[in-house]
Image 1 (cartoon, rainbow, N blue to C red):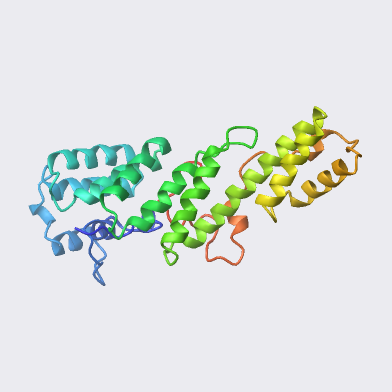
Image 2 (cartoon, rainbow, N blue to C red; image 1 turned 180 degrees about the vertical axis):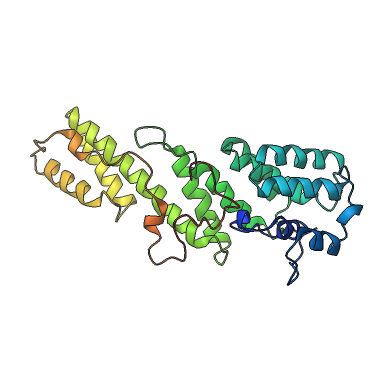
Length: 277
């Protein structure tokens, strides 16, 4: 069974349409009710609740209404009871999605990675790769803490851009790469400001040079150049070191989407609004 890439906004879909997508089919024009679609795909009253067909219906119903914990349980049972059914791939992917939308990003990422490793040619792989990047992106904290999540997000999204340059998630992936890189530039600025505070000027210069070389055009580019020039001239700034500290939070990725076909609030790769997105 092939899995079609999930729609960006299934909350806007009827349950009927979601079922059709879940089965890897195209929606029939004019089928606006769940009963019509269920009958068309052969489920209707024939789908017993404990059958594979019945379970996938229940799971997708819960999933589309944001009941991710309930959907996760049913998809898990579906995998266990019917490991060789035509819904096994769907269940594998939706278990990962449920974990993601429940905010369990650390648990979701290896599930997406397992799906990619086990089904490398599946048509859902571009979506899966995007979600791997999102799992790291959602764990980015503030510039005064560990930045490994930002580095991981840049790497994951960059891999998607290289591998599937025509995927529908590319524009958003590129914008999120820029946001994560700007976050990393702010981190370097923060560290440089700390070195200014402790009067360790050579270390501050090194951080600023690294920032300018690796994150050109960042939102702290101007400040970094100003501070570096002052330090190299032997005239450390007199004003408080705190004046050099940028916003410590992750910038809004949508501000980096200028000229890209994405809009704030319309997450291209997500299948529904994510906690904290």
